[in-house]
Length: 203
Length: 208
Image (cartoon, rainbow over all chains, first blue to last red; front, side, top):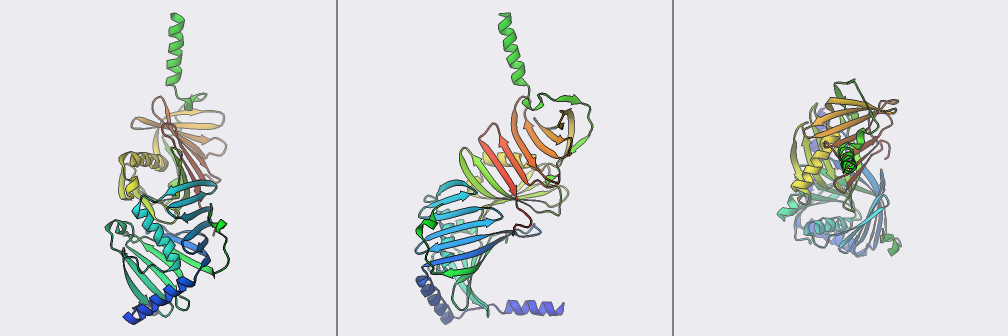
């Protein structure tokens, strides 16, 4: 028991704020990585944590990104559902039922989608809608985004990106709601800069 | 003239009777109470993929229901990406609103959703009438000005259908498909007075 308490405090203590020079180094690395990243293919697992549930709601699938801003999210388990983000539209294929959602008029929706697209690349430090803080641990670097906009703050209390130490790629996204419930997306089997045809981004 | 009256009367009488009870035989009340077993186990997280068709628009999401105490249910709907759309609590009589996104936070929409969840979640109701066919035993319950007809299959004893009606018209029909009679793998909810159809498919336990 004492061991676990010690271990717990040790793990918490491992996360520390970055110094200003570390922050600028880290940002530079993420931005240069993101510039040289033309395509990303990755598997992901998504956990929806709701406090009252015994288990998190788990879904999984594949994500494809092609610079500058084409993204396809495809859930394959336990159901088939995919979304292509295209300019001001979402192209949705819900198990064969296709639909389009115009997001041009909704600032909030646009913002939420921007977050998803930009979080894939990791490069969203210049977003003026958020206050960003940077943390480090031996295993990862972490950027925490707090919304300044009151409207966005009703939906998201904070938004966290976890980066690999070595290649500055995002391996985890966590969106925490004001209720403390959260959505966590963990990427795996990431392939960078393979050839991806534009036809992938249709739905 | 008499023929005209007779025809009119025939139409009035037939249009006033519910299709739901057509062809059913009235029987004695075999039960005092009817129960819906599909959301009553407190140890189960009921998680469904939802497909909603409303006035020819298609929406999707995840519907999560949990019985949190002997009287209370928590109902959360999220997008596929996990963002919360609504978070309600139902105590068997009334709803508490924990969170609802602006777009859904309208009286008409919330009333439809609440009535829908109430129909789905009420786990016990007093039987006021009983019927049967060769296939089903049918139990009628009353909820304010509305009536619910519970169709139990005689051979399997499973709850297969709930039909919600006014005195004269069918309003909502819920069909359950269940292999064990305790968990509904599929639920289809069809409204007859508004263009609304909701299909729920339960997440498979070993899907991941």
